[in-house]
Amino acid sequence: MNIYKMCDICNEEYTDQLQEEILKLDSTAQFELGCQNLCAIGAVSAFVLMNGMLIKGETVEEIIEQIKERL
Image (tube, rainbow, N blue to C red; front, side):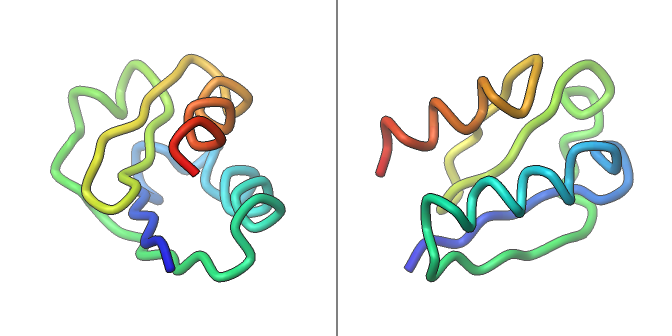
């Protein structure tokens, strides 16, 4: 089971879409939403912490491709 942490404050526009796409790849995914203290990153790009590892990209699709590589 993988844990995905996302900021629903600075990454608000991506959060729902990221969750949907991640669940398609990883049906046992657990999500933790809230401030991740990565505001400088969240201000310029979308990101998710997958088991504590930072994954960021310009688009949700870029993030999903990186998650696929790690799964």
